Amino acid sequence: MKKICLTLVGIYMMMLHAFAQYQDKDTTFYISKPLKIDEVNLVSSYYSQNGDHSAITGGIGTEKVTDLSNGLDVTWIGWDDMNRKHTLTAGLGFDHHTSASSAYVSKTGASKTGGSRVYPSLNWSVENAKKGNEFGLGLYFSKEYNYSSFGLDAEYSKKTKNNGEFTGKLTGYFDRVKMIYPSEFVQVVTVTAASGGGENRNKIPTSPRTTGTLSLSFSQVINKRLQGIILMDGVYQTGYLGLPFHRVYFNDGTPNIENLPSQRLKLPIGMRLNYFLGDKIILRSYYRYYIDSWGLQSHTASLEVPVKITPFFSVSPFYRYYTQTSVKYFASYEVHTASDQFYTSNYSLSAFDSQFYGVNFRIAPPKGLFNGLNSLELRYGHYSQTTNLVSDVISVDLKFK
Amino acid sequence: MTKQTLKKLILVPVAGIILASCANVKAYQKSRLNDSEMILGNRKVEKNELNFQSYREGASGANGGKTGGGCGCN
Image 1 (cartoon, rainbow over the protein chains, first blue to last red):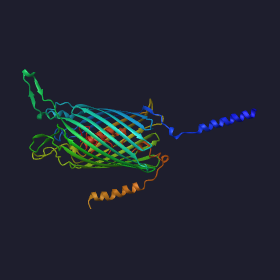
Image 2: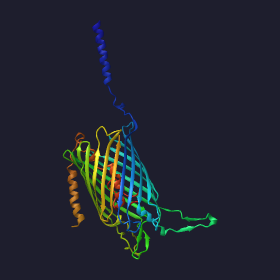
Image 3: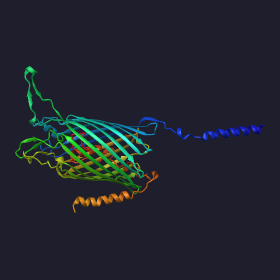
Image 4: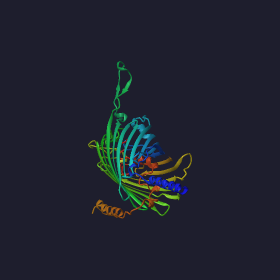
């Protein structure tokens, strides 16, 4: 009797086990996970510049500028019940600059030399790892005393079966330029006592500037140590494309305001190749060719060589060379004539070569540094142009995870 | 033969050779490719460098940074 009972219990247990193995394929599901903070980045930079070709004073005069920039990005990641990854990034930037030449927007040098800019942003993307595609949207806003901007973009990317990825992005910026003219061009309206008294200036009008960009890129893993990407932008700008406080002096000494065409088409195409050499050295290379409808052509080439002193500490010297031709409408101080239709003495649109070199330090131990600080990067660079403009920039990036 | 034609004659076959030699790299073979300093983009710490370059130079774009608009720059 005992044997029969035990046998029956055993058979019953086997039947239970058999049912436990059964799985209905149609009932497979994913559990959605709400958005949680994944990463926080704080990037700060100090920039200092000097030169002697200020556009505000017609291509002569000091270009002394200092700028302190701060940016904070917070990234949230979550998954929906279809196992798609959602990424939301909110950014806030704040810059404060001083510019010695800004004092000469007023003919007497009495204009203020400092200014601030605030620029928030919001980006959302959803990635379907199974299908290998990703879609994203972005919103951007920027405000400073003489310029305001509203931008938005939409992006789509698709992975190929052989470790490649296509990306396309459409971006639009809808900007307003405050028409602040040099003081000698501003009409001062005297108001009588009957209408309120005192001296009054006309309200400052604004002009629109619109920029549309189509960005395309293709990245490819070439082998276990080498990968590259080709990037191309097609940019169309329309509206007020100069700055109203940039002076141009004609050959007879008369001052005028910079006058540039109201349309510009730009076509940059760039390529990156990154190669892991041996066990400790990486070669990061970049080249860009640029051409636009104002006649400017340029070449940019850079090489950065991260050297991994330890797996968690790297030192990366870098060098960048840049050369450009002038736009059709550029001439230096007192060279333009009254018969020129378009004219500028802004030396950023002149012909020059430049060099930028420096070093980047990165510390990223696996357990982080302290108080959630995951990695620290410190970067210094020295920049010089053949126009005699020189600058230094030092930046730090703190990443918290 | 112009300079531009010569550049195309060199760059196009080089790009073709590189792409044609793409190896089929498995996920477990990507340890070097996935290194943080092998990313095919700018470091976050470079952001303000790209900004000042777009202000001081006539060219912009094709680098993940500004292409125009959004600031009182070129």
